[in-house]
Length: 589
Ligand code: ASP
Ligand code: MG
Image (cartoon, rainbow, N blue to C red; front, top):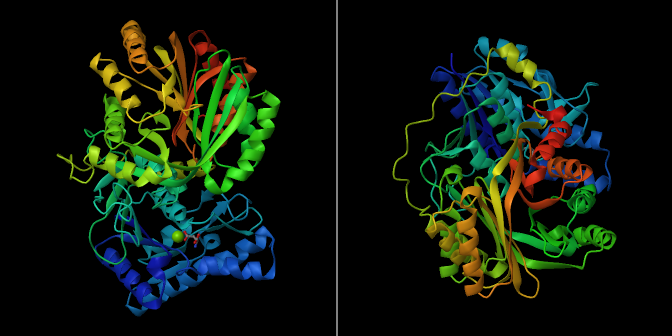
């Protein structure tokens, strides 16, 4: 019999009427011939209220007691949901995380799932019951109640769908699907019929947070198809699966993050260990860093820029000033008035000219690009905050995201099987642990850098226009904020076309009155990709440490949700790969 997991978020069970409406959806699914597991969140803002209550008692409530308290929110809603189903004439049984057997580690308030037993669930399902499972909670080895972190019910739902090998995991929420951008920002945003796991991971981190990122990581790892849809209507929502909506299109969505701040360390010595010194200090303060951009240095010095959430700027500057003093950096600058605009799409990995199209559109809208970083499936630019919305609208239009895709290919092929249920449960042990799926070395590229680019709209567009006209495929692009109104722009191209690319770049640099052009005919790109990169922020640091200890200098860096790339000297590629193999040996998938 097919099996469905349905998850109802807080707003979908906010009062008795909504609980009854949700109960009806579960019953309909049961009557359509499915086994049904319903995962519920706490009602409305219950979790926030419980947190506020605890704060009235103590500034630092013990984490164990916080979990004891917070788990009651979901215990209330599962009981009411089971009653609602009974009142409508069907069989249902509610279960807490402990009763199901959701085992976690002991990190209270942000525990990770270790294993889930399926016996009791299966038995109830086979008896024809609708099982109502409390989201967000589990128990540790000592039977202490734990919770999975805010928004954790999504993770419970996807994890249950994984162990039960559900045919679909339906996430009922207060939005009716995934949009090409936040519809509150741009009314022309379009609901997509389908989006891939990787695209969703990138978009989730970029502020389009419809779902808990950890739950998408689970879904990808265990091939769980997700359907995000409205609890208040029956309109189909959006599927999150392996295959994108329109594989031929380069971009599936665009995002704007307004509350960013940029920090730049100027003139740090361009030698092994520099990135490690900076980012390990920041990580020690648990500050999440985004958009790291390091550009090749000139005269043995490099500039390193990155962004953080604006609220964390003061704290970040403290950490950075220590690192700057120790490294003998020439200075630290920052800018609080910035916003990040990104485009995401699986299709751009195999298409040329995507960056150029984005830069051209921004130039035509007179938006100045301060910083650029690209990954295989994402291009992000930093712009001044007051131009953020214009920039978002411009790129959304440039990629015609408001229009339905020309061809939506047939529904995704059936997900690869997870093997038998026992095997899945066995793999669950540590299923939330970091898993590195690939370490790669690309020795086919060359690097070009234009120093002293005038920091005005249109320059990046001109550069990549010219390069494209020479028929050259550009891979990694990194532009750092300049000093005194000048920026540095580095990019990599295939070695075979290096001479033409160099010539075109030199010509351009002169035409646009830039500074010098530096280059390296042979660089090595080292990449670490995997699942869990987002929730395990130490990946980049591990990478920097391994390379620093081997005396390998990092020339360019870029990071995304599923991958960290660094460019090093061409001669150091093999050795770099070797030390990364060692550094990540314990977490290879
Ligand atoms: N009730 C929990 C929270 O608000 C879990 C959830 O809603 O997913 O964080
Ligand atoms: Mg929630």
